[in-house]
Length: 633
Image 1: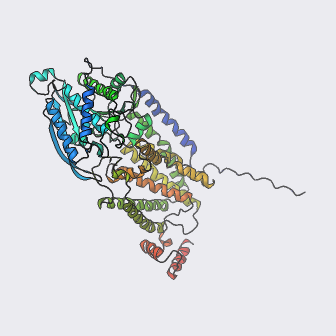
Image 2: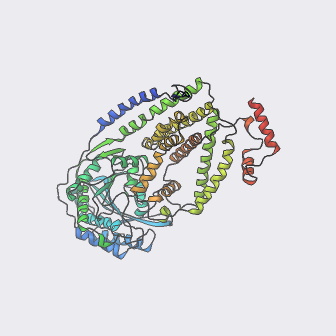
Image 3: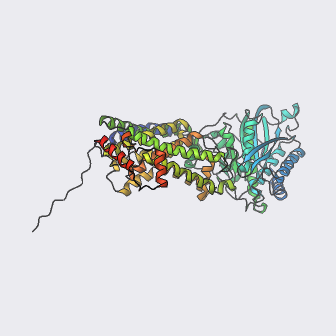
């Protein structure tokens, strides 16, 4: 009987070998340090203060507000910025305020709106003078997209604004010492903005140019307040900031008292995403981003209602009354209560409790420490083994140069008008700028990208078998770059670390996966892309963009809404992802030495590949290869 050969078991590479260079013990041990910031964050959670309700009950006339909303939506259904309907709507609001006893002021300005060009805009401002030089602002935009009559978005908010103004018309609107003594404690500013549906341009104008901008204590925005949805609060700004907890909890309390239900607001994860990638479509956002406390009262979610179905017959009179009375009581609480803390900051709200932003930042920064410790140890390991990293680093810089080329081409196409141009504010999701992909511009960017890749790949394609030491150098160079990007992210916006943390802690273990099946290596590589996927998925779902979410984010970059440092960090991160993908696909090679390079230049070689074909060989190629072989020997 033939003897059966003994079964050979696959032995796990020993710790500290080239197959297992990551010091897992120090990595796991460093995670214990993260427990300290987590403990600090847990003890930083506290209950938010709430201002008491005003002494007088709400006297909001719901039927009068509904009549005003019906008149605006029915008589001027097309109120797109710059249109005749927008001009008539501004005159109508000004005349209504004038009939109530105010002396409204019209602020004329112009702005460039994507897909519409530069248009003339108008803000209508009416002030009920108070005893204090500080001010509280109540605002609502009166424009719409022009697709429908905009009854809920935002004729309802405008009607509520005008009805709230009427209640203050006899309390000091005419000025004078007697009126001031009987009027509100603060100046109450009633602001009807233009282009609120197109990035909140009217709110931006007031926040940056009004004489009251440095004296505003709080802002209450009324938007879509007569819909069928549950009353809700919008709190995110266009910078990584949130309004003070006292303002948020006071607004929530007044809504709860009137609607007999707890108002909605974005959950903790959505709030964290808003701090990491600030994006909000409501007009309180420009104020919060500039350090002015502000909230939006609405009956919709993160995106205003569709214009096609936004007709007067769909307005809910009961909901309009609840939201109007809650806004009036909130205004009274802010006017009669203690002064709010000035400025804004990052917060996470959990019902009546909140966590300060510094505690969240501390936890996120602590979570990059285990990765940094492991990468420094990996670098020291390569130094002890005398593994040269210069080729790997130069290979990464080559990839970084390619993505910098892509960014430069994108900027060039933006300048020449390949993408819709306008102010640095989020475009309306219903507009052509948000949903119509510029095919020619994207094809041009693709063509320029292909040219850049043909030039770059000449120094990146393998020309010989790559040793295991060179592969480890490739991983180490990528990890060092990733660590630098993590530190830059922490310095610019620590909340944005949530997008880069998955790649840090997944890609760190790729050097240990080299002997594993391809599917497992690619799975670990794919985990590192979770951060950008979360960003796109959140934008697609919360704002109802669907498959248009990638283009919408791209348009935010083209409009300069996304800060340039964030774009640069993302492009550098793509360079890291490219190097690690090449390593996992077995297509990585260190940057060639002078002896390994062909005699012709990079551009000449790339051009020859396009025109002649990669299979053509010339005597000069063979001569260069022989010289390289001699140099290696």
